[in-house]
Length: 405
Image (cartoon, rainbow, N blue to C red; front, side, top):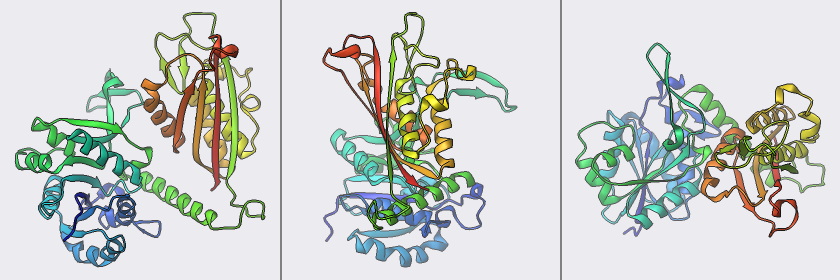
């Protein structure tokens, strides 16, 4: 008898008509497998072996069982395939119905988010168990959001400070999810909304930019590129060591940027791509975002393309007051044209202010979204030493890893 207490229901019964393929979305090829197969790999990458339930179109159930049961068996994961219903909600309900009583934690995941990393599953599961309530991964909304009417006319700007973009897997205590589904009388777009509608609480944890949803052909193309990059990294890891003439060697760059605080108290502070209300701004031809500039320097150095000063000159009037996002997007374009993809970026801020911790996740989500790769942001003071310790400005040090495309 299985002792597994966590289950992952992978919802893969949708048609995916907007994707432009004749087969159901989950069965569209991705890399050397399908969207569903890539999603299953992520689920089975969890350190804790889950009970896996794949909910698929009825006509694909036998094919799915034959193809993926051996994959689950190789990971020692209990495995079921269930025919989906007419709606997503009905499909999840059918998945819940086959779970054994021993299961106490359930994660519901959309196969259409196949590149969600295993650590997101683990973080959600850990939070459900620690808090005893529903937990959903989410990203801060970084774009300006407008409410528009049916004709496309802008009606108003929506305050995004309390908005977040929901992802999956969405996790719940088993009893709470069963109860919510038994009391649902409407259709909801996700399980968090269904559970919340019954009065149960749902929390949010930080999501991952790689957990994007494949809906349109452009999304599939992005996923194909990321899978190809991932497979390329695996090939590089098994190839000849650096210095042996291998053209697939990863490249690392370091960038540093420094900005003094502006004399004009009215200058706003922009740092790590974020506006910091009430904080003293940094002096510079652009917005003085030392973190973004250091990241650009690191990326350009790794790609052998020079530095920020050489490419984004202070004499360019188009860059007067330009935000860090402008620099990052142009740097990303140049890096890709040079034949590289970004592996990850790390940036360290040095200064007394602002206090990064309350907005660290927001900064990481914004920068990761712009660059399409993980960006970690950290901060430290300099123990009252030097110009940063005296409160005269901020410095930033960044490191970037690039892989050949």
